[in-house]
Amino acid sequence: MSIISRIFGKEKIKAATISLVGPPKSGKTTLVRYLTTGEPVLEPVPTTLGIDVRKNAVNISGWSLTAIDTGGQETYRQAFWELSIQQADAVIFVIDATVRESTDPKGFSLMEKQFEYLVKVMPEDMPLLILLNKQDLVDFSPMNIEEAVTVFPKDLLHGRIMSFVACSAKFGQGVQEAITWLIDRMNE
Ligand SMILES: Nc1nc2c(ncn2[C@@H]2O[C@H](COP(=O)(O)OP(=O)(O)OP(=O)(O)O)[C@@H](O)[C@H]2O)c(=O)[nH]1
Ligand SMILES: [Mg+2]
View 1 (cartoon, rainbow, N blue to C red):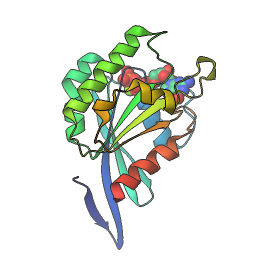
View 2 (view 1 turned 135 degrees about the vertical axis):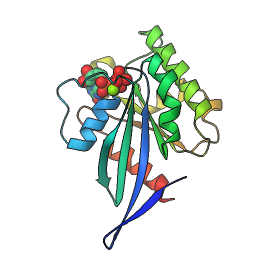
View 3 (view 1 turned 90 degrees about the vertical axis):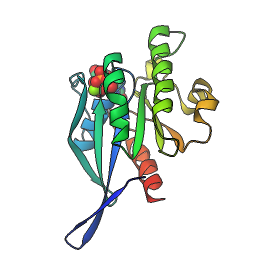
View 4 (view 1 turned 180 degrees about the horizontal axis):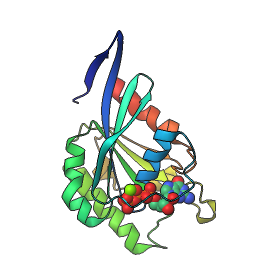
């Protein structure tokens, strides 16, 4: 991992870059907004057109984390995901946990296809966090971790440094757990 350590005055701050990828409208930009403001994101955010490499940095537990927010549409996947991952120390794959094969077959198969692409282009030793987002939409019984484990092919996850976290980027539930997992991997 290419973690950069910098010295700011006497305090040592470690910096890392996190690539956010995943299907369109899964909540990547909402997550960035929640992380940078610490407030619920009640208004919809604009669709990401391409890649957003503005310095979306947050300081947590001695780390300065910069998010690269990547558009989820297929054209942006083809153009930017690999580039986004190449700049990163870890990847978060954000999914809308209410999208199931039975209720939204198109959305589900896009997610599967994009995940297969992701594991092809990301290094095997790069930490991968799969976020099961939109847990606040309880009326849709969003996928929990138990179900997600059956959805993601085991052979694609085998040997990877990875985890699932259920969250709501909109309200922040589970976000702390997600970031803690990533920081723990960085500290290793
Ligand atoms: N209920 C709920 N809605 C969410 C959550 N996260 C995102 N959304 C909504 O989902 C929609 C899409 O969110 P974005 O953050 O723009 O999704 P994205 O993954 O960045 O989408 P692209 O930029 O197109 O790839 C918006 O209307 C958000 O308000 C969540 O945790 N819960
Ligand atoms: Mg976006």
